[in-house]
Image (cartoon, rainbow, N blue to C red; front, side):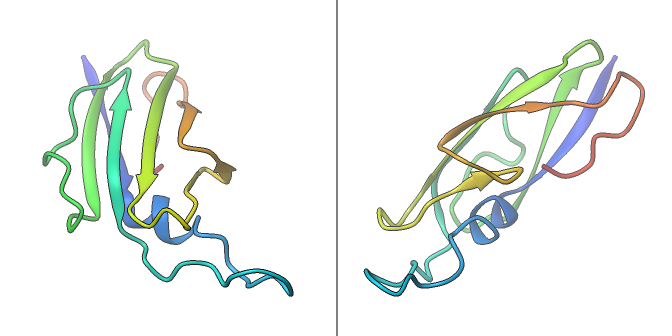
Amino acid sequence: MKRMLSILALALAALALVGCPQPEGPAPSADVALEVLSVSGASDLNPAFNPTVTAYTVNAEWDTTTVSVFAVAADTKASVAVNATKAKLVSVPLNAAGTPTGNL
């Protein structure tokens, strides 16, 4: 049996692009597009990755405890965070089998 996980790519990028300009240095990027988005430990993204798509679904086996999300911002000056962890590759713990995981 499999469970379904929803991934909102826009949330992965938009919420994670660091918010406030620093007193010194450039302002954060306004480009919230992703260049790359992949998930390991689960089925392929559905639909297949496309920078204009903002919501994806993957399926994971019931006994899967984590999935790894790899996301790269299209703008090299932007940064990406997954579940508040600022990194390109993040291991995301899943809820116990049989409970909804929700959006990552």
